[in-house]
Image (cartoon, rainbow, N blue to C red; front, side):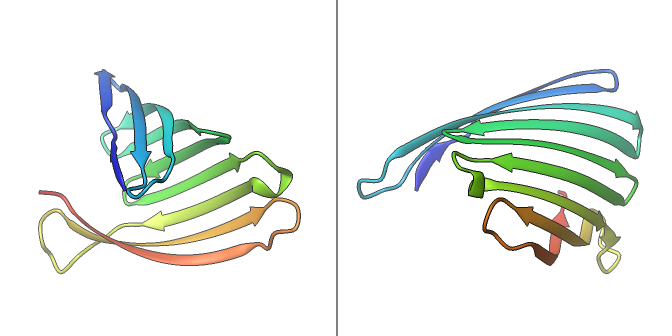
Length: 134
C-alpha cells in the first residue's frame, strides 16, 4: 500500500479544527481510494475535551463523538456503507493507566460494543493500547 495522509490543525483558545485527506493505492494493480476527514474539538479544561469527527471515503461515511475526562474516555461511532448490511454503531469506554512510572507512557484498556446492519452479528471487544509520548 502506498499513499499520503496530509492533515492540518487550527487552534483558537479551547477550540480545535482539524481536516485531513487520504489517498492510498494497493501496490500491484489495486484501485486508488481517497477520503476526507473533519474534526472539531472543544477543551473543557486542561484534562477534558469533547470531539466531533466526520469522515467519508468512497461510499463509506462515519460520524463519531467522544469525550475525554482526565484518563477516562467514552465515545459513540456510527458508520454507514453502500448497503444496509454495511452499517455499524459502536460504543466504547477506555481508561489510561501509567505504565511502570515511565514519563509519557500509558497502557489503555478499552471495551467496545458494536451492533451491525442487517444480517450481521453484534460484537463485544476488549483491547489494550500502549502509548508513549516523546
